[in-house]
Amino acid sequence: MQVVIAPTGAEVGRLAAAKVASVVERRPDAVLGLATGSSPLAIYEDLAARARSGRLRVGAVRAFALDEYVGLPPEHPESYHSVIRRVATEPIGLDPALVHVPDGSAPDLDAAAADYERRIRAAGGIDLQILGIGANGHIGFNEPTSSFASRTRIKTLAPRTRRDNARFFDSAEDVPTHCLTQGLGTILEARELVLVATGEAKAEAVAGMVEGPLSSFCPASALQLHPAATVIVDEAAASRLQLADYYRYTYENLPAWQRFDDGGRSGDGSTGAGTGA
Ligand code: F6R
Image (cartoon, rainbow, N blue to C red; front, side, top):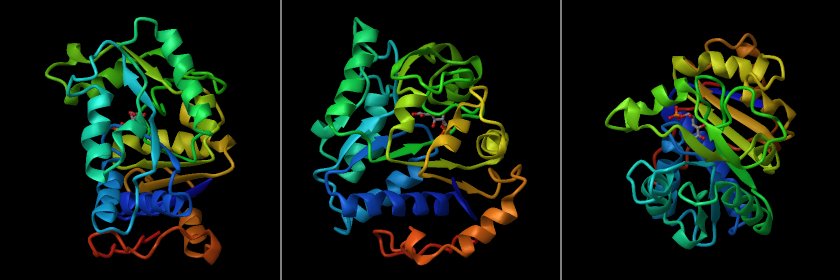
């Protein structure tokens, strides 16, 4: 696992976007895994800037969202169908026909989950999966004690997750109780993972993921099993990491062939403030 500590949330997003962009530059019809929530917004903004400036061609990019609420119609503004369209598909300029989201309104949710797995397989698997992390260590909506072998399925949202996501809804009771989510086994099959986290509220989960025992109690610790996982965090999210200095040293001394920072060449021509990492 590569751990990168960046000085700001914007820099976290820029570095992660550079990684996504390098995958798309190598493979114009790359299959991306998309997360929702606040964490990936800076990534999508940076990718949108790259696409607007013509530096990144995204017309053939395919994408699969990680999860969807059960029981929210796709046109509900907080359904992940709507969120993905609003924060990723439209601003980046992805082809909507190539962007998939689990069908949380399907009459048969087990069949919808199996169909989602089939569609990912038919696309040849996910090249790069973007991830955020919940304060309880979830990735996707794989709540604590999710099996490392799990596939896309219906899950009950943990009360803490519902509380954390209440900010997107009029009231806490409006947050759905269930979701369809890619499983940990599904996520681990992506060829590359990039997880971003910012803020003190994520520090404990980040420490559990990176330095804790491999345990479904912290589902994100599954990233320790993946051969190509990159975790990019800001200083606050890194604040509970025991080996933070080692991660900084490692990043400063990365061999050129392992670097993915493209020197702050984001789409609008601005330069990053440096990783400080
Ligand atoms: C949503 C998802 C979740 C979020 C996590 C963090 O698609 O996969 O795992 O990434 O709940 O959410 P934010 O980024 O809003 O703190």
